[in-house]
Image (tube, rainbow, N blue to C red):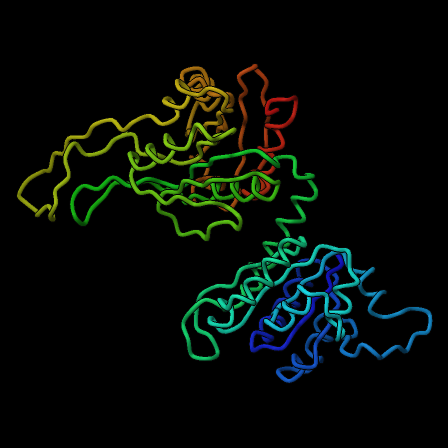
Length: 398
């Protein structure tokens, strides 16, 4: 992918150096533009060394009579990135002001453009800046929202430029979405992910080894393909995917209520969470003190969310997961029938290379019409895309 990186004047310029390096390492070809203000913070040399291309800084430096440089660069790129994007540059682009190498090139471009704002929190929240970013979004610019954190001014607040890896993830998600031609556009999709925890007392609880990676990957993949995604998540240590609505829950009952209250508005429901089957009959408000002898606890069944969805679905396409350690096909087919699901995605969690804590997965899909699909071991985001593609294939999801 040919990427044109425009660097404008802010302290976050140092992150743009790292971004250049990571883009090149990811296999992209990168050319860099810099404003005069950006050069006050860092010289073009590190960008040139990392990109292995000339850094373009002067709109009027036209040494090649055969091309107009800013038009040639605009035509060359597949994707534009502005990082960091200052309030000044955001305002110029929003109002079509082409007065330097960056703004002139970008206004001449017809390619997708990503904007990563970086500025003081008060500047970021200023009505004019917010209005300008809204205008850019209306013009199909992709704004990568800044993070909260320590700012150069000393504030700890919103305005810190997104990290290079976050920017790359946004771009790669867009690229993947384009590859699949937004085939889930207009679909409302709910995914459950992660474990649930069932509290025993004020300090102890029961849970499982689920990390939530598979569910989060499915949410990210569906959003990149145009779906309106709601992610109902148990407690995990993961960053929510961009563009996904997240509902955080704790217990199996919490997850059931969150899903039940939203199911009527969904087209597709994917139950990827590892929900507790049992919860304590009673919970101590304080701490259960150690005592002599063995401890006996009484548990009751939690609500079977997939079973409830299967009994009450109307128009929804229902996808369940079966995390098994043996007789995977038998248990998956039994679950498909008992839960009235449209498809069961089964995986062997006894295999540590694709288990709960692995970055990879391998699954088998068992469809209600009797068809099956095997997805070999690959990163979980790739597995997620393969699952979504399989659901679309043969008109399973219309």
